[in-house]
Length: 494
Image: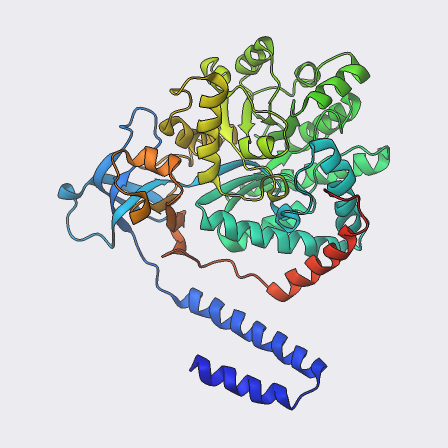
């Protein structure tokens, strides 16, 4: 049938003008996308019990791995986790070479930046950010007509949600522009997110900053009032070096007066590079951590991305305050920023979770790969092969991320009563056999594949196919082609 349709299109196109051929191709692509969408929606996915070779709950106090267990869920909640021999009847789904894990939590990312993947590789952070990323975001988002900016965010967010689901992420902590658009995409995809409409940057315009902070706070207050379980609120000052102390105080007050004591994640970049530390110290006489602490913005609601350069005293301060660190090893390595002293932070009692950062500085949103880098880089810099074990890496990517976002009672581990946010990973590829330690296999090998993802018990990925995200390739390609042309006007990257 496919061959017949291709022949029909070939014959038709032979008698049409180039413009008509292009229109026909676009229409055919749209119809194909619609067909695929309807097919996915019609696909039955009524699984309520899953039997897997292994289950890693990431729940404190549980064994590292349970063997030959069945996980059942109903009405979006986990109902039981029992040995197969104790399960009455036949499970709906049998996965003989898989490990079930909690949905992965990406604790720091910039989802629409998938459109900037590979845009400016092999550059140090400051050059990468100020000579390539900020100018491009200005051109296509901030200085563009609003609908064009939203379209950029929409298409980038769709690519990101597709990639994250494909690699097992169910919850992400985002920071970008037009967050309400990313929220719409996440809702359609069935994912959970923590965000607000706009990352806070101070560019010298007092009114713009005040209006943005107020609009963000009002958006987040609406999420709180609605008790939204899918999209949660955050305050997102980019960093102390991009938002001075007085403006941080202003944003804090805007949220406090509007959200009135509700849990709101304070999401920021912190101590990412040596230059950042030097610049802040020169301008203020203080470190960024001291500034945040002095403002009361270093607490259990704080998710501080990177924290590459930390003194022992600063690590102790983070631990005492309850602030959370979102470790992004691939991004830090790729930008040559260094690597965070994760083993020291863990030993000091700091809650360390994992994030990918944006795809522009990482080139992937794959949290399985992030686990691998987190474990191996920690062993390398500490010269301790026991640092950040495979079990710890999984916890950092799941329950520690949920804790950082204030959601550990809801998700982040497989426990009866929690949300059925579950990922099945196939470890049975021949090139990675044999399997002695399934957790080690999950973290250290590269031949493992996410085959199924459930969020609140709803199947979003089945047999490796993402069911809830359809990419409009034509619209995405139109944006990318414009970016290619603009890229030619920027400084050379090599």
